[in-house]
Image 1: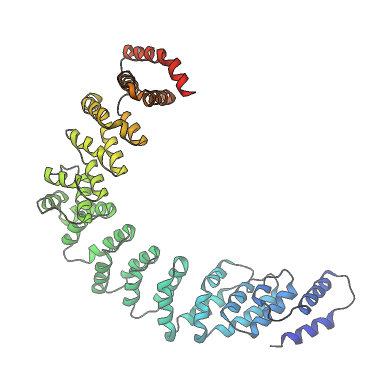
Image 2: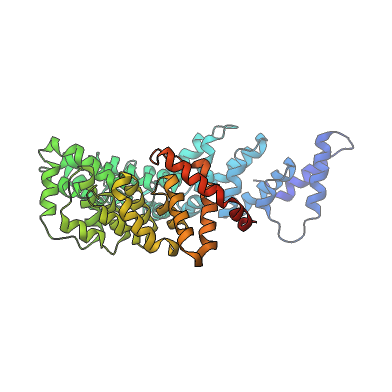
Length: 444
């Protein structure tokens, strides 16, 4: 290949007095290149809008190989000027060897992007790069790079390493533990091509790892490989993942297993010590619409884990109103609002007495969001009745109760109350009307 200086000299000789666009671009290039002092960022110059400058930059990069130069040459493989594409292609050939494997790996993303670019046929280039990365001598380096990748690059390297691999067990094992979910899914599919014993071992190892979507696929692939799938299904039925439990409930009858029997056996054992055991058992109880024994329910409602207490609240029955109200004291907002939702499902008359007690005892000291949620357990007009009664009886907190009445008025347009009789609503409206001057004065 000629040196850059030789090429520039030829360019100068071609320049003749002319006003043509091409000559103007040549002159622009010569002026810019003549003023370059010291080291020049030739990689950046490959993106210049002037094609002559890009050509000079590509020639310089071809003479000084480096990972940065490789990335710039890859970009120029799709240049809109054919001569520059050809120069970049010639420069890229010097990287197509095992000694430049690390440079190729560092440029993997722009290399993959070539597949979707169509100014030229990049297929031969991509095949040549793939052949280099599949060389036996650098397989370990490619494997190590694969373990650090994410997204499309990780999937590309996994497929590359898997192709033609005569002993893929180590690769598949590392892919099943990869941080990229899509790679783990590909690894599950790859297990189907392995001998049954190898696949069974790898899938067993991978099943406990996090990621419900992958674990369901693993379980689906593993069950046909087992002589007796019942032990795995028993564990899956009380798994912490709802997706795993759902698949296990579907597969259990096909394998001669009754989910209700599994739950009964679990409930006859000692109480779990770990959160996973609690959530798996409570989840299966809810999904089978079963009744949780009192000892389990009380322990779950007192658990140190908020998620366990939340699951226990969802399992409360209509006759467990006391426990629902106790859950309103839970420090976790999720548990509190779950208890509110359960109480909202109950008939108003069944909770009215306990609710009045709760309001009288705790309501003024509750945070605003919690206080409003508890108050809204009452039908809309009965909320006003409660607030007006407190306004009448608590002279020292007049300002507080007036504010609450005003807040009730502000949200009237959201109110639906099919419970309070019309006569009672009219009486409350008259009481509120008498207070209008005082309330208006307070709110100003």
